[in-house]
Picture: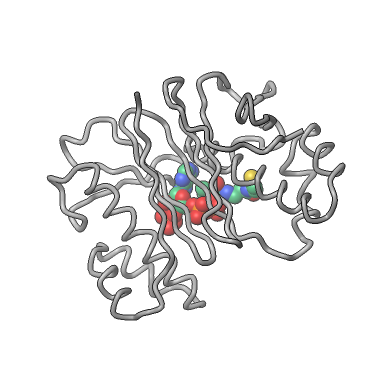
Length: 232
Ligand SMILES: CC(C)(COP(=O)(O)OP(=O)(O)OC[C@H]1O[C@@H](n2cnc3c(N)ncnc32)[C@H](O)[C@@H]1OP(=O)(O)O)[C@@H](O)C(=O)NCCC(=O)NCCS
């Protein structure tokens, strides 16, 4: 069975802990961390990249966290390039108050965490982000459930497009999620997205009262199911 490792971290308040994380990063990452206007974003970035390096070294104990090297794929996804790691696949995500990282061998994986904002701008985006079926399901719900559902669709979609590594070149409205406790999350893909939806597995997680997350992995062998909401 394929193992997908997920790790999560809350950015530390203590500057000492943050400095320890900073020491794991390479010069480019350190330089990048100085460019954030908001200190909160800087702390999350440092945490996510330290988490990535620690997670990779847990997977490959022969390589120290600060020895990892990366190159960017055509759509910007950083890929580890150290010799001897085989077909290692990894992905990170950061949002307000949380960083997440996934790693697996020879399996496409993606992760997304999102802060559940109380703002209403999210509803202005639904036509450009959700499929017709998802919009219909969402609009049937009351206000609180609707917001929760929006972030559920959002994290699932992001985890999928991040696993594919193709970024927003994929048409979000043609990628659709449904599901229930008994069947898990089901991916449906309309013409226009070049992929076979079978074989994908998704896991949802709820790491804090304000953050939601999802993991996508292209493997038919992985049992990621825990507790699934009904998405109809
Ligand atoms: C590039 C993209 C991955 C950014 O996603 P995001 O949700 O803003 O940010 P996340 O924190 O989850 O992920 C960012 C990390 O993903 C990685 N990444 C960058 N390009 C990537 C790609 N093409 N595929 C997968 N991962 C990518 C990087 O490690 C990046 O972190 P870093 O810049 O600190 O190195 C892309 O999916 C995007 O622009 N998404 C927004 C599209 C949208 O409108 N979504 C609406 C809801 S579906």
